[in-house]
Length: 210
Image (cartoon, rainbow, N blue to C red; front, side, top):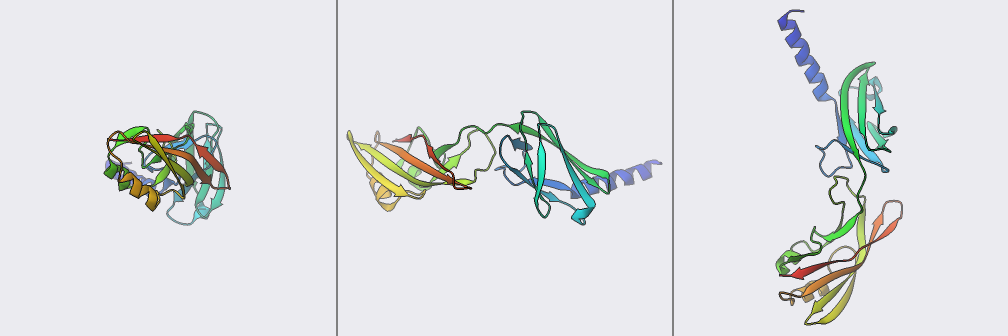
């Protein structure tokens, strides 16, 4: 093959490769090549042409794969290792993608990433809702806070208010506006609901007013 023909072949191969992609639907940052142990890692294939012309193989990290929909699959891994996905078209490989595997650290609840820290009243009220966070990981949590209570420590006295949902209720917001530097908000009795009906109670956390 002459240089011109080789260049054309490389460009053609690059185009084919570029049109085929794997999208990880369970990551907060889709640019990361990561799978997590013990959970469903949902992926979607971007394929030029009909899906029936393609096949997919998963290897390594004690992995398995199951088809869940049109161009959609669920990958499970069971070991810290490298997992490799191979996509074939008409028995010819068109894409190889490697993933590192990780364990999911314990989930925590925060007030928009504020936890056991100090903040101004305006910062607390800027985004006044609780969320479930996976510290140091990119896994997207399929769950939400459904109830919590707040204990306001002001002048040495405590005021407790409960709330349904994940957002500070109007009474809580109004009370927070009266807080001054040194006062503390404790978030307690935090419960989250997950797919499948599972309910989890999260550890309490605090925010001290600056």
